[in-house]
Figure: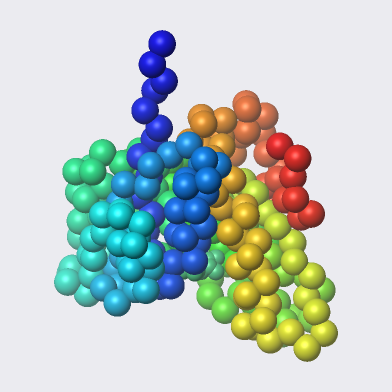
Length: 222
Ligand code: GRF
């Protein structure tokens, strides 16, 4: 019997694309049963576009400044995703607030990674805010994207200790290493049909996930 085709993924970026690279590497290593078919950037100068080109992935720059509203920009994204028959959408450092125009058609098929221990520190400058608050740990959270900014159901979360002398940059660098582990893993579950959004909550293999997602800290055996 022939295997079903692996789902087709689009990765949306705005910057350096280190998470995109983690996805490319995971696909190459056979750890993510999906094809990255398209990389879209709202920023034509995003370094991540070159990573995609090096990997032979089609790229598209859709500059939000060319559109009169967030909705019009999102419609352009949706049109591009539809024309490439995209199944799953991965936001990887995509610095635009999305509207229902994009969120609705991809609800349950749309993931984001946020560099904090959600629900702490939605929004920007997360590492600096954790340092300013005197927190002892920071981290990252993969979550489903819903209408609420950085507020969709968490899937996977990793905690990273804050060290004496940490700056926002040093902390971000250590968190990024962990982001590159958890994000392709969550996407793998989605690609395998194990992860779902049900009645507003995330489930894995039909089981509801904890409110802050599965704790990946220290790795996972699965
Ligand atoms: C990451 O820190 C991610 O958590 C946040 O944006 C950053 C993107 O980095 N959403 P990169 O472009 O993947 O290197």
